[in-house]
Length: 157
Length: 157
Length: 157
Length: 157
Image (cartoon, rainbow over the protein chains, first blue to last red):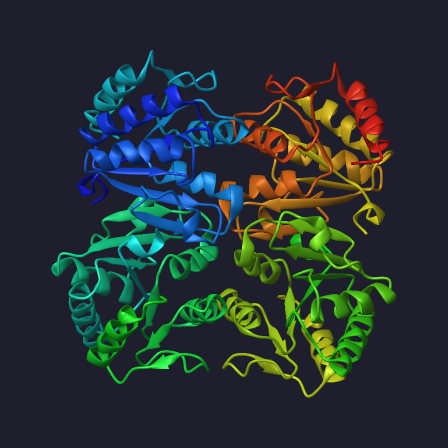
């Protein structure tokens, strides 16, 4: 059954980003929307907002799993908001809802999410994010999308 | 922003149901899919499975917020699985993700979800479910859908 | 192993209470401290504060499992604060940490906790709280403590 | 009020450990019990069990915040079990319940807990654990306890 469901890509990263990083992340979102139907992320600002913007521009469906009970805390590019109210514990849900994850630069919150990917054995592709053993390094956004495509072809995902 | 998002209907109820209740719940799901685009539920068996079956038959999008980490625990009519791993605490998320809720017969789990609806001030329409002050009673499935439609027209929802 | 641990009594009830209810709840706390060593509750104001006050007056140990990350949200009679940050989902933890529960008057939050008691098969003794099938009714605070003592003597608890 | 409560030390680390690490961790527990009254940890096996063993040998009070609903999953040196049922999301609670944390060698779970320490700005002292910027490195168990004592003297903790 599970294999019949549409694949979900997770994207994690910081709450804030430079203008250049923002453009790069929008591009990542657009490119990801060409290879997978659904995006899940933490639903807030910074890289989360940028990747949703790009993914929606490519007509993908975006899910934001947010820490608070307030759906208005989600950025405007989130289609479906899950207002968990469980605070930072929602990081587990963001990661576990995804079939694979792309990690962008971020602080400790992003690190906790990478740790959960490793613990759950969910493939995590890093573009200039934390350098932790077990993470798949990508040179840039384009390389990350190529690696996502390769993972999608793995029958056992 | 929030008001621009598609409305989400929540349906709660027991893990098991009679053949008659199942048919009735499939019918509820179909009828709900005519008036709202997205369904959220606990994602498991019984009334949760039946309402997803009906809602998907009506081409709606179904979300299952399940207690375990195992996406395969979700019923086959769930499009998007959120494998929370937070056990019964996921009941809060099911209810809070919805704009309004229809409650079907169920045990203590359903009662906890009705309680959360009341606490969050989320309208909850009961069809033969727990009789708790504050719950909106519907005579049957058809009446419940009429009440959902009326709530959808409320500007402040 | 488990049976060697000290028993834990849970007390649930509303955020606010009248002066009379407060005195009654302090009395409950004192009496409970004579028959069980550890109290767990939601850690906030109203009945939660009053029962902690009484239990500490009887030299019991009090645990407050609070919804926020801020330990200062706990009342001053809580010895050990668990700042969950998981919001109302913490209700599950309050109930599940206890071997048995006394329910005092409260709103929907208390109802959700009673529902979780029933779902987990944790004995719940009601003193003027929600009248739900499966709840053990006590006439007053003294009667509730007698019922707690009787439960503590059950070998299979 | 908060400053009047007894301080709580958190210890995090792997589910399994060598015989040597076990002895070292028991020693850590004993030494910590001389400087702080309450220990919180994940409550399971390996380093969690060893540190509880040592802390209890020094007459400290041990709290185990476990992922499951089953109190019997806690090791036999845990005095108070919080059976969260929220899976790995309980890592947040372990860390947030502590005033400061000692990190021992561990896998991705330990890394997620270190990340949460950094995010919450809770001091985290590493003894041969993950080398992440912001972590306070200790040479060995004795050095870690010295650093804990120094932190306890900080008025703003």
